[in-house]
Length: 248
Image (cartoon, rainbow, N blue to C red):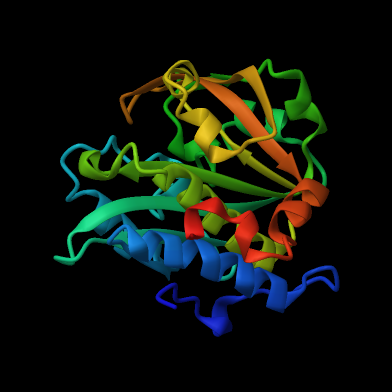
């Protein structure tokens, strides 16, 4: 199995997490990626992650959510995935982090800009703003795993890789955090092009994030997608490998 996770970085698991089931789940998708010529690995140093993503000419800039100069991620509260092809060149990247919203919700976290900056009062531009009108965002609270910064190299598109990438992040997030919710903010064009369906999101609403970050040069109108913790567990707790069609 090529997917590498440092056990020293894994947070204490809830009793609901069955490590054997998670291992089987991840192994199936890891093998599916390997069959497509991609070796997956997991990292935890976001300085390293930013240095990697800066070298990818077709990738949009990494949002400040995953940049330690704007939003430091404490040990055990974030990770990133990279996929290398047979020439050890980067074929894909994506990242995840955990937000503690026990006293808030995802809509408030977005509109306060705390999703993007550790201290918006000092780091955000005075004209930065984010609006979240997706109704369900106000109900997303507790331990929230945010998945983002997806990039897949053009020559690997159309091969089912988005499903593999989404599944691996879900499995790792479940193992590390057993979150109450998993959320994402995909661009609208992913829905119209049918790409979003490959990720297997069970819930999707418009108005997830209408975002303007002046100094970052970011203007976005993104959807809100999410899974509940129970839905995530059901996905990971598949008992038979033949339920993973991409692993055949």
